[in-house]
Image 1 (cartoon, rainbow, N blue to C red):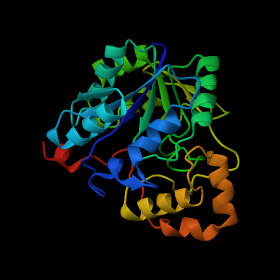
Image 2: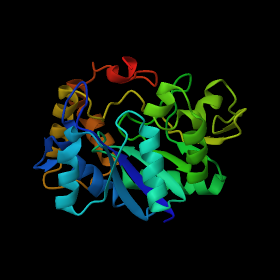
Image 3: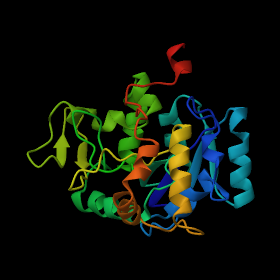
Length: 269
């Protein structure tokens, strides 16, 4: 398989347990993520990567009932979970999506894949942690890497945040200021070539992910504005929130987790 999207999913969210199967417009959130990602023409396959913990049995059952492929692996070493899933499918390129992004945009996945392939990089994303400024709304996050780079990260990454957040080992060098003057390409001591895909104007203050009850309220309201549809684009949504600024007030006060925020159960180990 050439291009495999792996959707990272678990029931054990600390701020909104069970969120990936919460109802949005009559469907579990994960269903919306899968349906929207499946519209990306650049993908050859989609797989849900859940944990082997019994708490994720409902995710596995949902996938079985819906005909979706599900791989179950390490609960806390998410990098290993991704690597083993990609290895199983013999993927050449891996696209990382998280299951708390029901507004993910297939056209944006395709755009980033074009840039990834054209630039011949090891890793590409439409956001990087500070000191870089996020320019796409939170909830449209896409990461793409070659299997070769993922395998090297799997072998070499040894910090807890590198294992839980999957791909930091691939892009941490450029966080030290090693991007070129265009802030689009960079290579550090580990040798990974990194592409950052930015948006102009800056829309990074918009929050379209689901991590808290207020986020869920926001997304449910969004879907109510597009009755019977989940094929609206991120640009359709942008037009909506610009036309009705009150909509973004629903969850504007929610604090977004950082790269170094770890699952408390990892911290105790």
